[in-house]
Length: 117
Image 1 (tube, rainbow, N blue to C red):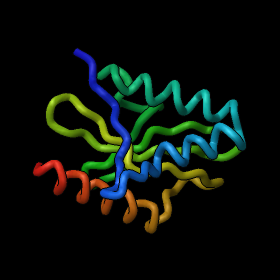
Image 2 (image 1 turned 60 degrees about the vertical axis):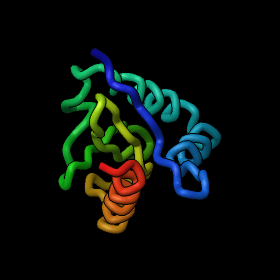
Image 3 (image 1 turned 60 degrees about the horizontal axis):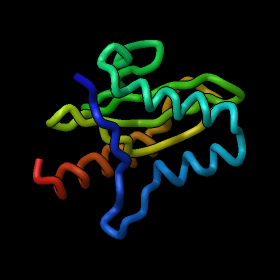
């Protein structure tokens, strides 16, 4: 069975991960292709482990791509074999900044609250 991949949307309809991907496509098309392909691979349970993904805590996972900059999309599982991508970042280091983890956790809680999970 496959998973579905959804993108987090705010109550106003804004989609931060799509915005991140649009910016990535414009600034670094090669990394965009790799990250977008990685999101597609998340549909398969076999892709839910390193080196493509890694747990970062509190129910969050990261999809990782190493290129000119490290590109990450943070996501979580929902009932019904669904994955929700909540935040995208690029950085030079290995660690995810606490503020980015906080943003992802906040969006995850918001989505779960609105979906009544």
